[in-house]
Length: 307
Image (cartoon, rainbow, N blue to C red; front, side, top):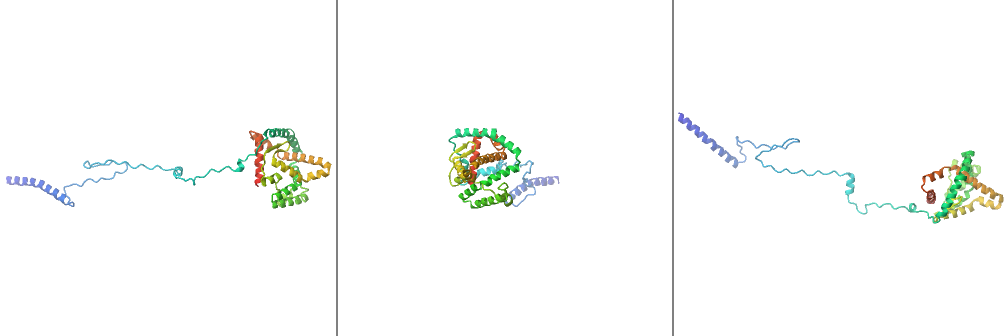
């Protein structure tokens, strides 16, 4: 009995390896066969952030591939610079305007500087003290009335230049101003045309007319007593003097010649009293007052011609 039991036990031990080999051969031939004794290969999970990847030692490890380089963000400024532009797309630098580049010629600068210093001393030693005293005596409304009176007298000068410049509306305005201010404005002391009817004065002269006709300033002049000018504006000043009614009255009345000279002096003192401090401010802010006055005058005349 014992012998029979040992024979059965040994035969079972021989059967187990044989069955294992048969199962392996069958699974190799049939992919769908799954042996109950075989364990499935461990699933390779994608490691999450911060996790350590566990690999099966039997699986060959592939060399890690470096991640593609991150694109550097391009700023709007770099993007604009990176765009190719053709020659047509590149804006050209604005050329300097002829008016800005134009500078009045000054071939007799030493003479002009001498007259400039003479006028400068005349202003500070004579005109400014007199105008300051005049300002203290005459109230501002009275000084403005005197300026209006002299402005009304020179209406024919402005009227003729408006016609010569083909500014017919301006000529009509000057005619209306003269009629209204002479009658209702107490001989021009009150600017009734501007206050009541909003008719503005036309700031025109024959030097401006010559500029509109195409004549340049030629060269700069600084005249004694009269101040900054040019050859063109000096000719214009002479023509305007011929158009001024005061000039013709002086021919007929000798005594009026003295009155005319006195009236011109009063007009200049009155005007200086209304503009005290302007010349001082310009001179204080300039490195070279002579050049500052010359350039300011040139730009002022150019602006009047362009209007």
